[in-house]
Each structure stands twice: as C-alpha cells, then as structure tokens.
Image (spheres, rainbow, N blue to C red):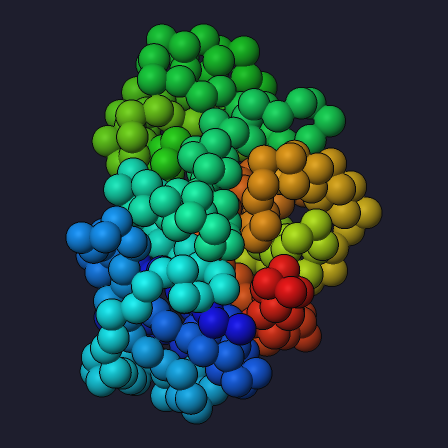
Length: 317
C-alpha cells in the first residue's frame, strides 16, 4: 500500500500521537509511507496535485526513531504526484478551507481520502452533535452566538453549565458556570474568542467527577478506549491540562450511545472518530484528527495503529 499522511507539522510529531502509531504500523507491513505538511501541497502547470513529501519508505517501524527523523527533517524529500498513492490520511488540526479544498480535489481525482473532506465540512463543528436526533444520548445543549439566548437557556437549567467554543480543541476556551450562573457572560465571551464565534452551552454532567472516556470508533466498529481523570482543581479532563489516563470498561450505556451514534457517522461518510462520553452520554465527537491510540493501546490492549492500517489496506483492496 502507498500511503500519504497529511499532518499539521512534522516538528510537532510525538511518539504518543495516533498518527505515529499508524505510520509505524504501516512501515512494519512494508508499506510506502510519505508525510506531507499543508504548505507542501501544490497544483503543477498540468493541473496535477503534487506533494513535497518526507519519504519514510523502508524506515524502521519504531515510533521514537520516526519522530527523531521528522524533528531533524532528515528524511528524504521528494516531489510526488498525489494520485501515485493509494490513500491519503488527513491528520491536520486545525484545518483551514484551503487544505480541505486540496483534499477535495484529490478525492475528486480518484484518490481515497480519509476522513472524507466533504464529511469533515459537515461534522467537525460541535453543532453537528447537537443537531442529531434525541435518541443519540448527550447533555442538553445550545449552540448560539447570542448571549441572550445563552442566558435564557441557563435560566431553565437545573444545574451548572459547561461553556465551550464551537470549534476548538485541547480544552481551550472551555469554562464552567456553577448553579448560581455567576460569570456566564465572561465564560461566553471567552469561548467565542477562542473559536469561530459560535458557543456551545451544555448541561454539566456530575458524573464527570468520575472521569471522561475517550473511545475510538473505526469503520463502524468500536475499537476500545480509556478513561481520563481530571487534574486536581480543574473540571476538564484533557491530558494536555494534566488529566490522568486510566484503563476502563465500556458500560451498557456507553455501548448503547455508540450504537446510536454510529449510523449517523456512517451516513455522513466518517471513517475514523474519537468519541468522548461521560455517564453514558456523548459530550464530543472528534472527526478531524482523532487521538487516543496511545493509551487505548497501552491500557486497553488494542493495537490501534495496526487496526487502522488493516482497514486501510482492505479499503484499498
């Protein structure tokens, strides 16, 4: 298989990143693997999509060695035509409309692109989860740019609220408003500034004190996941903010929530997603650059990189 992976930056590569798990698994199979950064996409004078790629073909399938090579930018560089590959894996976060447009051109020309760029346009905003039918269990949620609407929503709430950007990651701009609703306006403005202006106002789930589960969903199948416990003094569970990963079991409620969500992911054309659950309810769906392979592999015993590459190879045929 000839695999090209579009990444945000090779300089930010880490051995814990899901992308590196996938790259190492592909190299272990003997696949051709090339990494491309967004600024290395171009259309040549014949109208063909060209990639200035870091070529890892034949590299040892060791994540530490791969990351060291990428950080040193010592991998061979080559200009290659996109259509000379079998599949393009999108691993860019954040992603802008120009990169989506290049990915759409590649898909229209016949290259298998995952996740499908058209699907990304429909599902990357947190508004997508809020728009699903009520049988998909999730906290009561409002998506708005209006503080007045948020205040009306808050007035009818029986508990605290989580306020977060409609498009952001890593816990940036996410705030908690207690039952008294003090600070709602401030948290709302912080969330608006941290993202694209739209704000998610979501009922706080007390079960969050017991942790948040990150579950990986691939091609209609639940691979596994792990629990993230919040750091002391914070209500957020993000590992970048000090959250602690632990092994966990998926409950009946977790499986029911994933079963309800799955058909909607498949309908949209999503292939790989990270799903966050608290108390059997879905609080977020990440389809842009799903992470979680490292601790799902380490704590859950599922070789995520290998499973992703196996499905890629089957789809390539």
